[in-house]
Length: 153
Image (tube, rainbow, N blue to C red):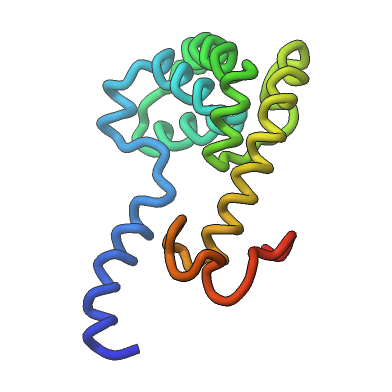
């Protein structure tokens, strides 16, 4: 790698390394509503492991985290996420789903919408990678020399 490339990449790598793991900072632990955080986490389909991450993050700063309030918001958020519409949206965006995240009563309907949407996402991603990452319309009608592979990604 040339020195010029390294000088451009170093700040980006440093920022991503420092910001990638923190769930919450000290200010967020002191001011954010645990119930609102739970609502956001549930609405985004996070597992219960997210609660433990938040508790540990705030403990580092000596700030207690209200787990009961988080759980109340989390349940409400999951009720919004664990719907057929939520499953379709999660699948089309490529979000992975860990079985058991949704309550047993709503998981079958969620998965019935999630699975085909996620398959469509995978096919589109594969096709776009095959086309050189430029999406639709790049190059010849078949990209770089032939029709897309059936399954090769």
